[in-house]
Image (tube, rainbow, N blue to C red; front, top):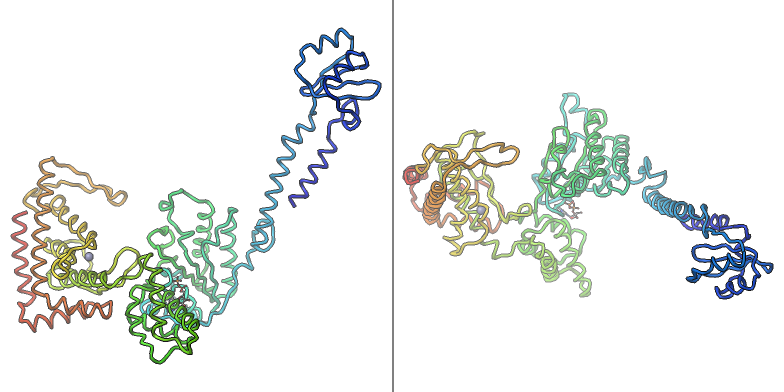
Length: 615
Ligand code: ADP
Ligand code: ZN
């Protein structure tokens, strides 16, 4: 295409090439300036034309052209010889036009056409690809079942309802029930989000439309939005159906979180998606949109509003049992030796996601094949684990055994203090599986009721629980680590707030040192106190932290055996629930004839009173 324009441009250039009164350039002869001068001086010239870089002489023998040299005397000579002369322009208006306007426009136009034609190839025809993405997303009917997804039992339960709805929509519609339109699957890469969405479609045997959000974004504004429109049009035609959007953060980033500022194309695409979701009537065309992300925190709030992705399902990394199940699933298609110990492999792979485990099995099969073996042996699996871990350790996704031990004690420290301290939130789950991207392990505490007020002893209890992690490292590992930095930050903040905002200390009494203002918008506080007070404040924060830490250390020492038992359970199962924690603790209390919890709590309260007076 581009070549056609170049040829055209050259042809036009030819047509427009300068013609002057001498006729075509072709019929003039090129001569040296000295020869030209000779012609003039010998009076063989009838007329002379002087240009910027050349001179032309008309003679009986035709037209001669010479390149100019510096010669200020030429005009004088011509005057003397009475030869008429005139100036002439070497280029004319048309050639100027050609070079400064026509050719650049042709080139520009050519490049543009080239890009458009490429785009069309990608999209599949039609000018600018608008309305032509119909071939882009095809539906499939996956034959994945829930039994192919393992280690994410809670997530499976949560989407179970969707399957039922897709199978018998009337059952729900009759009752006027509103089924969620959008479900956001949240979890690290490779944990089976895509697989789970497929399994929902497979179980309900409905068409599955799958697209990566990044592929919506094209060079031309408006294409993404039209693709979304087409996608939903097709999905509605085949309803009930499932639309799966992978990496939704590519279009769903909140405006404030993209440092480059707004992106028109992304925003238009997002808006189209939102209006499609708002627009379709779930009653008549049940299309369920499932989206996956591993960064829910950067999503635009508009996406999470009711009627959109108002349901979030956590698809987390599998624990020990989950890994066993996933390994078994992927070993089905592989010739595995009877001597293989799946349990050992599951133990070696803490922190790995489903996709990593699938990869381990495959790698082991490759190794066995290379060794000309009949079956995959344990050693192949172990080597495959080591290989994939070497790759993953760089991404810090696997927990090494030494860290696992520290994390286990740290989390059990939190959990124990939470259970034996009055006013602390109860433990729902303790885990040493890395969650999300930051934390190595976690202890989930659930408040027992909705609370708007915190009493003094509850705040102190929260501080104690936060200090429990670090204290356990000190008591059991005998060395402290960086793992507690977030805990310490939060504990410090609570004590500071108690003194400076809630009037809960003797240092400042009822005087409020910090006012919260616009915390919704900025989270800032206004500080209003003297240097001297600042010093006192810092000092008493430190004193209280130290005191609480001592109390917590003492409690942990009393419960040493309970912690050891908890760590053992946690080490083996990687997640234990709150009930299990409570059982371990009460068994230990009975065995060791420990003062019952209530008494400890009352002692605690006395401690608290003292702390309060000192503060
Ligand atoms: P995600 O969408 O979360 O990044 P995928 O669903 O694409 O992860 O996982 C890739 C592959 O890894 C799957 O096709 C499956 O073979 C395997 N896999 C991942 N998670 C699981 C799981 N929980 N159970 C079984 N296989 C899994
Ligand atoms: Zn901690």
